[in-house]
Amino acid sequence: MAKPYSEPQYAELTPEIREKLEKFREEHADDPMGGVGTSVLFEDDNVKIWEMVLEPGEASDLHHHEHPYYLVISEGDIVAGVPPKDSGMDPFIGVIPEGGNTVPVPAGGTEWAVNIGKKRYYEILIELKNA
Image (tube, rainbow, N blue to C red; front, side, top):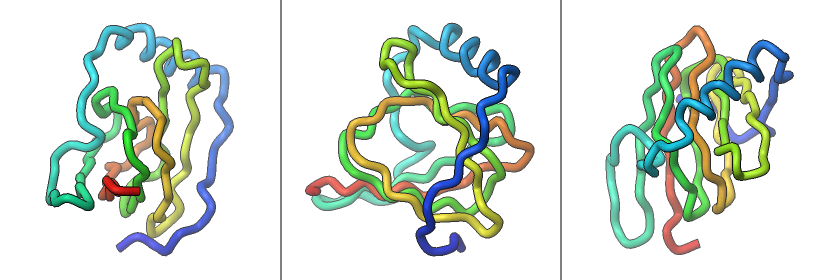
């Protein structure tokens, strides 16, 4: 089970990793918009609960966070958030603390999640539809 909320931790975006993520953005520039997770576990009028599983080297669909979310991260070491090039935002690298983390995500972001780590990445995403 993921630890309670703590401030997100970020790693330095080295030139080597930046180049790799910029190449990813170029290669996937025409990707269609997809879901924020791998699969939907539950949905009602108030929430939509997703699961995301990314093995090392795998990426999520390009997705948009239409509503606020809580990410309950229970596995992984590092994961990159890669916004589309035309967003004006730089990629970033999130460090997953030992035992996981719970992180709030505001509405509005668009990105791919890319597992650039050595461990399987697993999270539950709780989408707050009425917030």
